[in-house]
Length: 607
Image 1 (cartoon, rainbow, N blue to C red):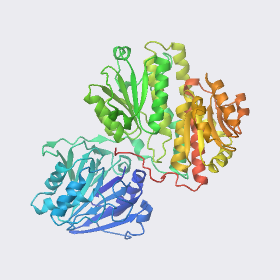
Image 2: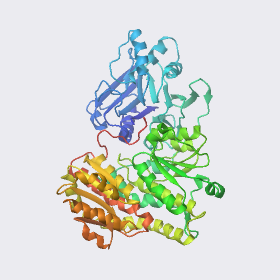
Image 3: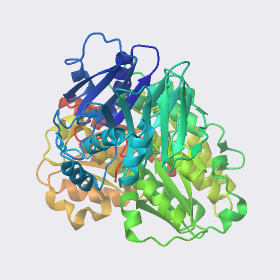
Image 4: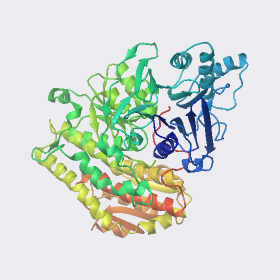
């Protein structure tokens, strides 16, 4: 949450900073600001709202070749210009941008008050700027002044500090991602890798506890304790430069329709069709490890948790190994019992989800092993786990995740076959699943050619007080994902339930005309799902039915949307797509900001 972008080089900084913020805007869009340094003069421009609003206060041109910028997702303090970053110190000598939360900021603020310094904002971040300035007045270097306050702070931070009287930028990381890009005679700082891809493919991922001092031609990395460390340069994947909107009206529209190609990238080289299994080399699993695995635990938040629930069912079905999906934010606080022989999968698109990172650290603390299932190469979870699988979705800019979900499901399907073929899963059944997985991108494309009466469904959804989503078996987490998408971007209250549980409470919400979205592929629980449809119709509900093409169950829907037939264990890859389209078109019809829904950020990096 929140985005940082900074530049130090020979080019004019302002256009680079604004473009960097635009690419980071999905991390927060409550307010935006930039600070520019030109010689000993620093100017600051801030405004409430999205990056586009910043143009109303910016000059048309500015000669500065150094600057820092921030796009905010509010934690401490309301959405006001005073709370907008960058924050300036009391003497104007320090400008600071910060992601994260300073837990003891009241104590640090009290120390400022005792020194006669008054804060002008409600934020926790501002206190850092003042303390750094006090450190400078005490004769400390910029690096020493930043280290001194961070050694007193408790919480999380990714921060970048600029000084009036000193050339260098100082950056630090603890619990919030920060990446340095190395150009030729210029340096960049960003919260995410993809804004850097158009400038350089050489990056340094700061680790927790790192402090970096940046000049236009280099960087020195040390620990907060003072010891210097080697700055390891990583080469960015080329895919992360391909994040432009193109001809699509929104990033979500673009990413929904990118799913066939994204899925091909995910499964390429990982399907052993003849043997009827998948292989994920990055998991580094031996046959002995698999057969001795007592259980598998899958961890995720939001969309990643829904993928984890599907993965849980696939693993139990194919491998007959007990599996449980956990919401990451609840995991650590529930005092989990960790078996060192168990497998723990940490699932996250960004690889920076704070709750999932905390869960991994708890697993490591108790002697367990964790595997990352992430999209962003070099992300914190990928580095923290050191083993796992990249889902290869490419950059996902819309806040509402789409192609990452289907690729997570595909990667977990491959993982389940890898476990299953060590024992329970026959070669023939494994081959059928692998063939279906290879066909899935083509079937997605066939569906896009004829998506069905999506707009009729949207008409029902947009006029509803609330919407009930139902599914059974593998379709239950798909129903949750569909409900999440509609809530996220259309702001329509939604409730998702396993179809069999509907009569244990949610049925009370139904009245004449209530829309109920039912996911009913042609699987072994279809007959039970049909009973739930009848119970809803008897209360006057209008049924939006997602079903397999050619299935007679289509007659049960007021609006029936057909997807191509696929192996029963792979149905989530197809049934989720019309739900994504329904949410997208509903949001457009209601005039919502599809890619930047209110109160949400793409990467949740605070607990």
